[in-house]
Structures are given as C-alpha cells and as structure tokens.
Length: 607
Image (cartoon, rainbow, N blue to C red; front, side, top):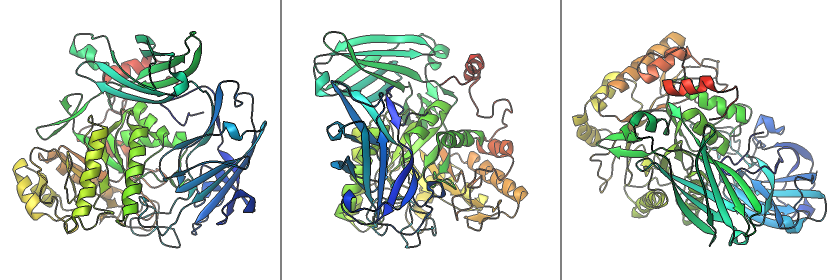
C-alpha cells in the first residue's frame, strides 16, 4: 500500500479510503444529517468512481465513516492518534464521536487533526462537512467549472467537491517528528536537514542515518535542545567527476538518498522512527540557460492537467506512476502540472522515475481581499508540503493573469504578483519562480511565453535567433497582451516557450477542440514532427512546454486520449520530442550508468 506522505513515513498507519456514508444537505451539525447514500472515498461525488457521479452543484457534502480501532491504531501511554486528510475541497469541518475536532480551509493542501481526546473506546465515528461554493470566483479553483451544470466548458472541466485525496489514521508518540525539510548543496556535496519536533521530544536526541543503494553515507546523532533543529550533513567526496555524478539526481539518473530519523528519549529509548528520502541536485540560471546540477539543461516539458476519465482529479498510485512513465516514454524530461497541486504520491513517482516538475498554484478568477488571502494561504501550505521533492524545479504562482486580469491598469494586482513571487523566493532560494506564466510579466526569474501559432515559419521568426527577442517582446501580443510590463527586465533571463502546439486530433471520436487540427494519425504525427523540429532549431529558447500530454475532456489536443491511448506511434512521438532517435531498449532515456545499476537490482527495487 502506497504511503500518502512519502517523505515522512511511519510504520503504524491505516488507510480510511473506501465506502463512506454520504449526504447532500446544508445542515450545520452531524445530528441534523440523514445519510442516504454511499460514496467511495477519496473520489469526488462528481466522478464516476465515487459511485455518485453527480455533476450538479451541491454546496455541502457530508461524510460519515464508522470503524473499529485495531490494536495497531490504538494509542497507548505517551501516544496520540492523528487523523489526516490529503485534500478536501473547500471548507472542511470534522467531528469524531460527535466531538468537533477541527477545521481546515483550502481545497488542495493537507491537514492533520489530533483526535486522541475524542476517543471513548474501540468504536469510532468520523463525520466531515465539506462546503464548496461552486460560484465563488475568488476561491482558488484551478480548472474547475463554475457553471451550474458543472460538466465543463471552454478550457474548464468538471468540478471537484469534498474529499478527493486519501484519509488516514496514524498512531504516533507524543515525542515525535512534525516535519522534515531537505535542502541539497551540490557544490559542497552536503544536505541541510531542518526537523521540527514536538515539545515532548525536547531534551532527547535526534538520530539521522543516510544511505544510498544500501550503503551508509552518514550516521549522526545530536541533542534536541529546541523544537527546531537544523543540521548540515556532508557526504563523502569521491573526488572525480564521473563518481560525483553518480551521487546526483537528474531525470536520466534519478538517484535518491534514503533517510532514517529517530527521536530518542534521554534514556536512549526510541520514541519515533521516520523514513524519508532526499537527493543531491541543484537548479540554476545562467546566461540564458536553465541549469541542472550546474550544467545547461534544455527543458522538454509537457503540460499535464491531471484528470482521469473515471476519477476526475483523483487517481490510483498505479495510474499516477503510469502518467509519469508516459511522459518519459513520449520523450519529455519534465511536466508543468497545470492549475493543480497534485498528490504527493505523484511527486514521489516523479522523484523515483525521474521527471522534472513545475508546480503551479490553482487560480482564482476574481480579485478580492479574500482571494488574496486564500491564494496566499494555499501557496504557503503547498510550498511547505512539497519543498523537499527533488523533482520540483520551478514554482508558478500565477498563469496568464488569471485572478489578476487588469495587471497593466491596477497597481494592487501587480503588487500581488510581485508579492507572491517574492514570498516564494523568500521561502525557497534554491529554485526559480515565475510570477505570471505566459504574458504580462512583472516579476520572475524566467521569461515564459504562450504562443499557439501553427505556422512554423512564424515561430522560427519569433524565436529562431537570440537577437529576435527584442522584436518579439515589442511586437508579439499573446492573446492580445504584452509579454512584459514596465519595470520587468527580461535581459539575461532564460526564455521558455511554456505553452505552444495544442494540435487537435479526435483519435477516439471525442468531440472537442485544439489550437490547430489534424484529420488523421499520419497528419497528426507529421504536424507534431514539424513543430518540434522548428522548436529544437530555435536558438532563443532554453526550453519548451508542449500543450498537452493527454486530452482533457473537451480539449482534444493531447498526445494521448484522456484514457491514455497514444494518438500515434510512441517511439516516433518521442523522437520528435527529443529531437533525436530513441533507443528502443531504453525508452525512458536513462543514462547508461543508471541502466547498468537497474539491471543489477532485483525486480521491484525502489529508486
């Protein structure tokens, strides 16, 4: 069973996904609810897999689950029982055994409640009230439809209400780790670890063991004199480039470092054991290049919206892994996860398989003081949750001026984009941030452009030579909007064509649209090859992001259908994406040294 929190795992936990009772009512307390149907958690009621499959607006969804605590769940002396929610859209209130235990606002980020004091025996009842106003345009909603029918229109898709990520129980010690944060430094071959612990752990010791491929890299222990401890662990330097490179993480060589953390008492007895992982890798910018581990690394990204035909925004671990491997098989070294904060399980597969990620804040569409607060809180929680994943190489607070539609005219909207960009960089100096992806840049480390021109000659004229940048910035209007606004200096910044392509081909007969059209498989592949050949020849670009990885409901401009059926030969598509031939024995494009290592591992070995 896949652990829902991959970088802070304990042995004692229990999955609460599966059948729950459900009701659509605006009642305020559990006692007032008549539960008249079942739902399969963690699928939203709008999705077929939920068993409800109802796209109509339901402002409040109630959930109830009765269970019996097992021995592994039951807290003993000095222990607590935690109830975790991966994500509930939007306002969640939770009761255990009729006792109100807490609340959380935000549809994309996790929350945890200590329910120990609400227990009164082995039988337990969990009840959740999830409120989500489908018409609230100031709420961060990403691509979720707001129209009453809720089935999707334009570039928006069926909405998601209620519980849509894993619910789980965890028995823990009162003296325990609360959070783990890893910051790698390739230049010094070191890892900085920041651990937050409970007050009960202070006065004990924290042990840290790092290993790679079963070999110990470091094994240290130190006193816990406060609730936050920061420590830098230096790794042994092999001395020559080839050996150093084997320590580094990249899509071609996704080398992870396993970590075991132990909180012990003053008497040496272990109270808490946590398993985590990290990696050595660096991200940088220099001379118009994107750098990975100090070297220029062209970004070959796909736009990935994270919807599935039966689960909506929710997928199984196997489906999440398959999507990561699909992107690699199609020749991409990364994805821009668009308008969604994806499950940590997906990020773990990106870390293990080797796929770069741009993480993006789901947009609101109205600019209000409340939307500013909600966007900021969601973004703070997302960065806190995902900071330590090596796959993430860029943060994207805004897309195409959504939620800030009057950037050229309203200084308060420009201030929000600049503020969230600066807030992002204050929390993470190790990755670039893009203030407003696509156009109307007012802050950001990359110059990103959305351009759906189908004519390859036009694209070559705009991006073929580095000296074309000034003309493109002056003359080109993406969707009628300037690429940069006064005060933003693009000089020296890497230029990324972060949306382009969008060739529509209804391979499975689905009606829909794209930015240009192909009538059959042969013409679809021909158009894709021509487009990619042009982009690879554009010397002004440090990378690209093709729209899109899969069809998404009425948008039929994916390289596969929504069911993940490729629209043309995968090897041919991958060759076009990479700009070179694909090795049939190495379709994911791993480095030969990584392949050699994999060939020596037993089946099912982890990264």
